[in-house]
Length: 221
Image (cartoon, rainbow, N blue to C red; front, top):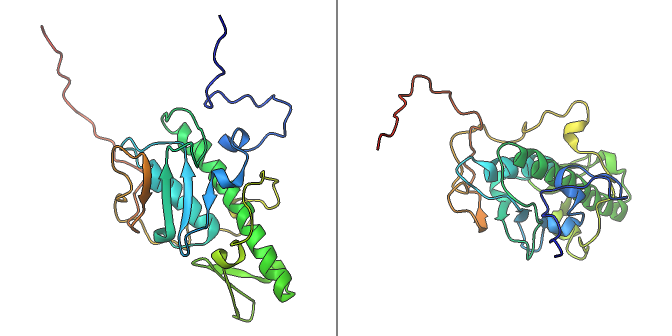
C-alpha cells in the first residue's frame, strides 16, 4: 500500500534546494505570499489560521513593517491554498516563526524589486530612496509613485532569490518603529479565520498577562 506524501508542515530542508527561511522553503513563489493587484491594499497570504492567539495581527504587523506601509493597508488572506501557501497545521508559536519569517523575507524581496524599478526609471541610487505608507520618495522629497504603480506589470510568480535582506537584519532599523502603539486586538483575529480578512488598524498586544491561582476543578462522574 502506497503512503501519501508528507504534509507541508514536515519541512525537508535536505531536498537538494537552497535552504530558505521558514515555510518559504516549501512555498518558494513570491505570489504565494503577496499580491498587489488591488490599489492601496497589500494582500498577504498565510497558511495559518486564527484560533484566538492573534496570529493574523502578528503577521500583518510583520508585513507592514517590512514594506513600510500602514497597518490598515494590509489585507490578510488566511488558509487558502488556491492562492496562498500550504503551511500544514497551525501549532503554537512555531506558526509565527515559520510563517512570519517567510512573509518578512518575501516582503523584503518585493520591496527591493519595486524600489529597483523606481530607481532605474528616475536614474537614482536605490539606497537613496525612502518608503512611507507605500509611497516612494527621493532624498530630495520627490514623489516617485508607490508599490502598486511599480509592481503592476511585474509577475510575482517567481521564486524568492534573496535579493535583499530584511530590514530587521540591518543595523539601525528598529522593527515596528513606524507603526502605532498597540491598542487592542485587531478585528482580523476572529474565529474561524479562513478566507480574506481585513485588518482595521487596531493592533494586538502580543504579550498576554499570566494569571495565577486559577482553581482547578476535577470532574467526578
